[in-house]
Image (tube, rainbow, N blue to C red; front, side, top):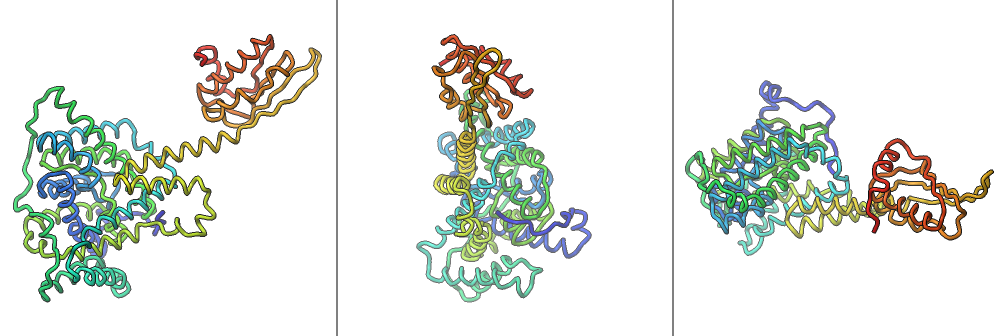
Length: 499
């Protein structure tokens, strides 16, 4: 996981506007991100099966809207591969108007989820899942660059190597201008002056020459339309919110600051609605570009996010002919260094792996494998959480113990069972087998003072134990229940069907 780099208060937009140094950082960061967004938006448009301008306009509207509406300053939202994969079938099977209707509905669902408190679910994502999320992200960012390094002229490879060298070395000379921007400008100048024939941004797709316009999808307002778009809109909403909230948490850790996750979820939904009405393909937080903005360029305010979107539009509409000349090798070098900086190398050190519990490593690896194999960060995180929950339940279940003691009192002998540990479905299923039904005397006491009843499965198990004893003419007394356990047991005992 990334560690905090500063404990200083996060600068505000007003402070940045009053400080030439801070403002310069925000402007240059926005320019670097804008340049990095162009090929990504075009490639995601291809994945979704739409014209490149649909992805580029989506990146513009998402970035500008989230700069005002979002809860995490300096985070970049734009058209993303995860959203493109989800909505591609709509475009393929039903056309552009239905795709935009899906984006609009997805944004509305995100707003509803935000109002329902979905941001609070972030507390249930373990650290090992976050580590897996970050590592999988780094692998996916690097993997996305491989296509630009296969079947290309030999000159691409030294250009990428030089770009990486500039990004690594330039900060030791000057830490004011972002090194990625220097690499992009230097490599572009060299390619143009030396007339080196290598793939450039213009080869990725045609850049738009006009501004985005208001667009209302022409779809029938009927139940059948909802049946078509609702499943994809829901998937888009969940994927978008999950990736955005995880990215916000990651930036929180890097900047050692706190952000409003509920506002971020609301902002993502509103930004997608705005994007839909401008004919964009929708999107969510872009983790790679966010890392460029926050970690590489050191931006900290909404100015950089706003300028990333604004400069993107200026570059592709007003300076499209110039932008098209940027060699892809320069942008590949930038993204490779982003992936290297994003990966949590500490998590895979032999010393760390030896020290870390196997269950934690299993969760991290499962998250990485599923994410990389599906190319969907949301699916990987969900699987990681499920694996973590299963391993946790298994571990806690083994901590439950039952001790038996025979006690003599004035009424004769009785068997006292002391149950220790947390009682829930994983541990209470074995509870039934821990009693000596045939060998116990006529009185049995089950002492739960050192345990807690968490669910109906435990109440059902206690009912089954009591019933089996009673079938042998023996009486069972349950004692030691704390207030919450007593309330749950009293409400459910005798009301659950036996199986």
